[in-house]
Image 1 (cartoon, rainbow, N blue to C red):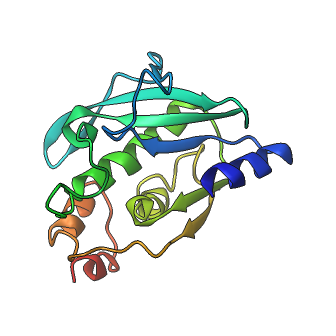
Image 2 (cartoon, rainbow, N blue to C red):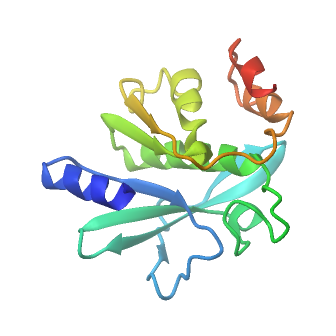
Length: 181
């Protein structure tokens, strides 16, 4: 769906950038991922820990679409995508790192997206950052947001400290209490 939607929008003359986590199950050699040195090298502080943001890129030649991969060994080196071998969901801090990584990369690209389309729950905090942390940024302030949620769902509640973690990023909003429940 994401590829088809991106391709259709690009064919209509829109400039498309697609971002996703570089999960450990993505074969870098087979998919010809390479690091974008000019975009990499930033560090993001998540939970008072410094994490290097690595940006890798590949493309879907048949669709002429570039895919930017948000990478960091602390968060995405495992072969599993959302749960471990026991079915336990991975840390919510990965969502924070991904959201911040995407938005910081967009800023570094100096690209002004007219629409950010978030797919699935993993990207669901991107709008919070757009409206609460990056609301004054000239590159991102006028961006519209679309969220598509699918049948995938949490098997257990979000980490009870997720709201606190987001708040420590500079988000102050009464709606954060809804995340904690």
